[in-house]
Image (cartoon, rainbow, N blue to C red; front, side):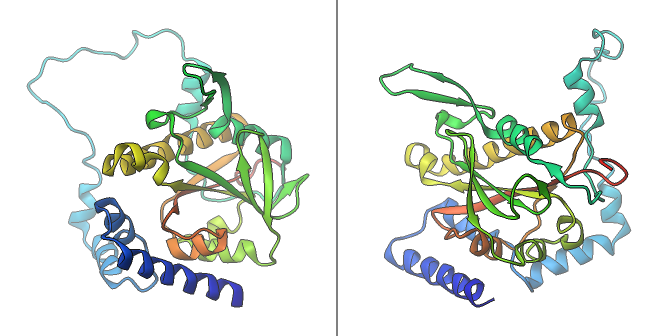
Amino acid sequence: MGNFNRAQSHVRSAVSTILKERPPEVWELYHEHSKLRRGDREFLIRIGGFFGNPSLQALTGRVFKVYATAPKVRLDGIADDESHLERLIRSRRSAQAWSQTAVPLPAVARLLKGASGITGVGTSTSISQFFRAAPSGGALYPIETYAALFRVDGAMEGLYHYDARENVLEQLDRESGLRARLAGATAYPGVVGRSAFLIMLTAIFERTTLKYGDRGYRFALLEAGHIAQNVCLMAEELGLGALCVGGFYDREVEALVGIDGIDESVIYMVAVGYKAGTGE
């Protein structure tokens, strides 16, 4: 745990130093303030109050906006036969329990390439432009993809970075206990810890804020959502399950991944594996 604690201390020191050197941008203040911390009393009170209030819970069933007096154009039954993509979208569900069967490395490779890999190369300017599986504001691609492999047949357990240009996994860490530490840094340790691998999406904000300023922060979040949906649909195509995870302790995950949480910060996570009762 010594390395982990030192990494957390380094992150806190870096945040303090940068904020003293220059006034923080609006998006930086929001991002730092919205990070989840252990013992966050305000957050825990809000969540506890929600689950303890039937009236608030009832509001979650009212998730459709309706213009009651507007004319309606009925859409059911007028489309052609359901496509393969439509069947994938319809069948997608968040996985809650996993089989303990290892996922083969070729399936991981297909999922990563389908989620955020290179799909083509163009030359609209004098600079080669790489096209990727997910749209990106200004084609600036601020999102990086990391994979923690826990139970993958054909690859060692450990932390990897996905290099989309070369379509390779770069092994960063084989530290024992990585699975337990990463799972423990989420709000769902029992579920995440039993998955076969964990996708972590980080943002290098300067890639997009350099051009778009505060708006660029929003573009980074949107791109992470596009990639996460690709992960979910690729998982469904491959007979796997996926669980998108937004509840995690940001600084703990960032320390484990080895990023500073400022120039590069974790945005989203997706746990993947065979769903319980499948893959045997």
